[in-house]
Every structure is written in structure tokens, then in C-alpha cells.
Amino acid sequence: MMKRVSLFLVVLTIGMLASAQAVYQLDSNNITIGDQVTLTISGESNYRTMEELSQNGVLALKQTYDSVNHLQFTTITSFDEGEHSIKFGDEDSIVLAVNDVEGVDTVNIEVKDIADIIKVRYTFWEIFRWILLGLAVVAVVVAIVYVIKRLKAHKPIIELHVEPPIPPDTRALNALEELRRKELWQAGKLKEYYTDLTDIVRNYLEEAWDIPSTDMTSDETLEAFASCKAYSETNDTKLRQILKTADMVKFAKSEPLPNEHTQAMNYATEFVVSLSELSSQQAATNSQASANSNEQ
Image (cartoon, rainbow, N blue to C red):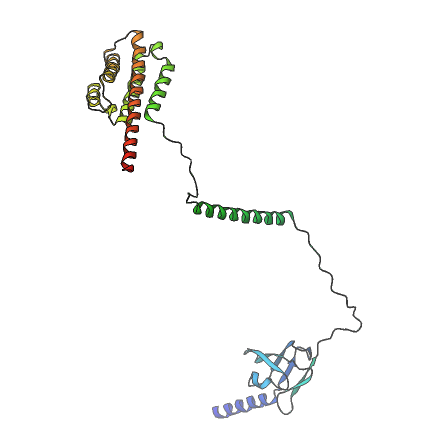
């Protein structure tokens, strides 16, 4: 019994498939060269390949499938003008008409001459940029010429004007004059007056004669000065008087007479002038000796 039922179903299925009719349909049967349309195939048991559908001037581009409804979609095109028949067997076929692109009417169209070139005015910034470029080129050329001239003359490219240092004696005499104008002792500022006075003298000894007086006591300064080339009894007496008077004011709170304040200032000025003259004489002597040595 079961065998008879199975045989019946097989025969029924074959009959239904045999009675089923394949359907071939295009989205459009009329296209322009290069346009694409979709070919839909339904009712076939086997899918058509792209090679099978590419025939008679028709080109298959891509395919998709709907397995549920057993549909096949193929995108086709053609680049040949005319009617192209796509055959699916001995009896079934479909026709695709391909039209050429509509041409341009060159007979009735009005052809115009090419328009003249329009000159666009330069803007301010465009002109300004050219001016800047010209100035930059001129500056570079001037700089190159300047450098070449300096090098040929064996001169430095850039000359730095450095102020010559002020000699120690000039600096000391200027400081003494400034201290005199302050009139400190006249205002009762004795300690400040003698502190500034001795600082000026000590700094001068350190800068001009390499005596580190600023780090020495008065006795140590006098002892070092006694071994200096600038030593003389007169200068030693003046230096001793300045330092001793200053020590009495600063440490013993002594109050010298007004003429002693003036005398201390005069001694300091004479001391610096005397040592400055001695330094100039030594420099002249050394210069003469060097000239004589070169002549020999």
C-alpha cells in the first residue's frame, strides 16, 4: 500500500513540473545603448548561467536569486544598436531593442565664436605681495654684497660697539665727587660718610693694585700696601689717616672736627690721583721698554 502511495506522489510531482511553464520577462524591451535592464526568469528548475544569457549582442553583468520563490534576476545590457533576441531554447525567446543615442543637431544649432579672454584686475594684496617679494630680493642682494666686501677687507661682518671700561682711578674719583655732593657729614651721617669713603678707597686698591682690601682689616690693608709698588711714605700716611679716622667713627663712635671730615676726603682724592699718576708712568715705561726691545 505504501509503495503505491509513494509511486503516485512521484508521478503527480513529475506531472506538475511538466505542466509548469517557464516565464521570461524584461523590465523594459526598449533601451538606449549602454543602459541596463533586469531579466526575470521564473518556473525553471535550473538556473541560467551568465554565459548562457550573454548572446546575440547582449551582455549579462550580474545575477541574484530568490530561492524561496525560485526566481532568477539577471542584469543585462548591450552596446550594439538594433534588436537582439535572447533565446532560452528552441521555442522560447525574448527580444531586446537597443537604440542609439540621439545625436546633436549640428545643422540648425547656432555656433558662436570663442569669447575673448577677460583681463581680471589685480587686487591690492596681490600687488602688495609682489612689492614685498621685490624688497626681499633687494635686501638679500644688499646683504650678500655687504658680506663679500667685509670679508675681502678682512673685517668682521658685524661690528659690536662696546664701550671701553672705565679705569679704576676714574671710577674712584667720580665716586668721591658724588660722595662729596651728598654732604652726608654735614647732615650728621658720619658713619655712613666714612663707610662710603673707605669703601671707595678699598675698591680702588683691589681693582688697580690687586690688594683685596675689602676683605681685610685696616692694619692688614696697610701691611699689604707697604709691599706694593705704589708705596710711598706720603701715600702711606694719607691712607693710614683715612682708615684710622674711619675706624674711630664706625667702632668708637668718635666725632671728628668738621675740618677732619674735609681732610679725609682730600686725602682720599690725593691718594687716588697720586697712585693713578704712578700707574701711568709705569705703563709709559713698560711701553718704551717694549718698543726698544722690538727695535733690537
